Image (cartoon, rainbow, N blue to C red; front, side, top):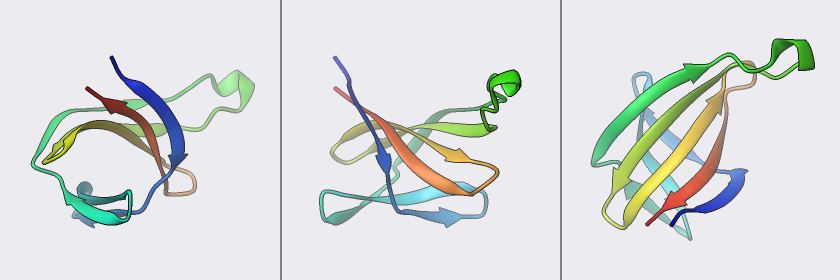
Length: 80
């Protein structure tokens, strides 16, 4: 079961990919990017384009996204 968090998060990048995330007071290294995709959103409702990353760290999996218009990162979900 996953837990929706939907909160801002700090992300260190390597090129265009997340390298580590700041979660619960410490940096977690991204061990694997399991999936990555882009969603354009409902443009007719002014939703922004987002790049999603399903990642694996040493403490578990996470789903995060970057809003492409602002480059802000959001931790969307923590996975079991």
